[in-house]
Image 1: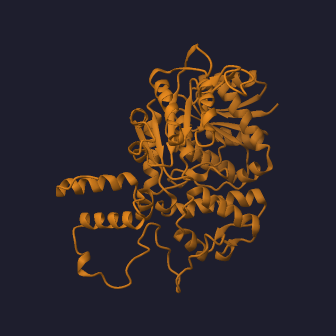
Image 2: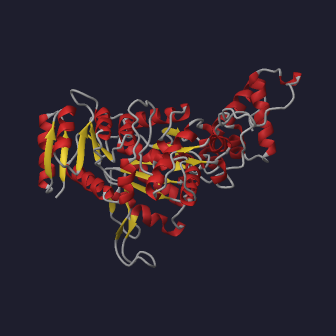
Image 3: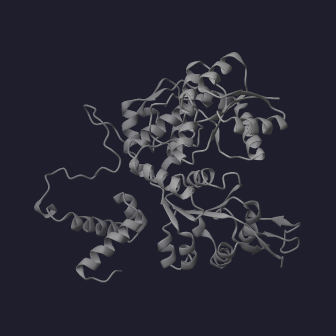
Length: 480
């Protein structure tokens, strides 16, 4: 059985967690300081480190860095009593495979340790861990080092705002409504809220409302009894039962049928439900987090989403920013994906050339982080070398060429349609008026498509409605 190095300065916690692990068949080595942990790791073989981040002689992140400098690369599961998302994701970025919030149950501890050991046994995970960068001096929040989960790497103001909202939401049990374009990381956001909240020991159950046929959706949520409809060959529990004590994440909620929205509203309000074909009422304790890539207010106005359900769920709103509004995060994400996929594919890439970076910074990224991830994987699979050049980029991404003479790429969201001639007098107007002119022009250009207009202007759809309403009220014109 695997040997666990537990680094925990609390004798009580150390004894408790050691007992949990030993009951599950693991051998446990214990260190109560960072210095002792480093020496033990050098002298004794271990298969996984269970690491408390608050040590008396050094920060747990510093210990991770020192171990890497010593060539000790083993899977790490972080233990922290601090509810901060930033601390946890910093540890994930610095090489940890998972984290647990103290206090944790025997089941959660042993399950997480077993999962980390199993994942580390895969060659690509060992390679990614071995190549994890030393980020101990980097202050920005970030995501996991694993490929495909780097969507929370970022230091842009937009992402710092998201991290703050996640941290605040995690302390509550209130419903959270996440909005944003496809590929911006809405499910990652939901997982972070769950994992850093009071329900972290409970299940996280995601349900994609757009991927399930309309006629099966009610059964997927509430379950069914045998024979209740064609194909119901046995009793089946639904997401409501599986998520008891944890979080139910309803992705693409605005795709749900209106009739089922009414049943969902009652379920949220009462905590009770009935399986399809069953008269027995059941109760469950669930936190609701939902997401959509549509503008929910437009869906309400168009009659496709119930207003009462909207107000019941829209307690803590979080808007995930599109990648084009995240500035230098594009480069940070691209470099992390390059590192991850190069390790997985056995390639030699270490950096992007200036021309490739310019093209990445100036691409609009309609598919957001998911598109960037796929683009970098395409590069790594089809090419090799130390530096990525513009010619290696997929055709849809590499169209922007660096101007002659080089120079830094403009920050995404900067005016790419800046006039080539000096501004004329008509531009000398109050900023508020220029904003409305730009909004009206964008709405007209895209035939009333507010979402498209907001994307081109680089602001949220709610900002468009708010600015137009304020302008209309100021000028005495009725709002549309």
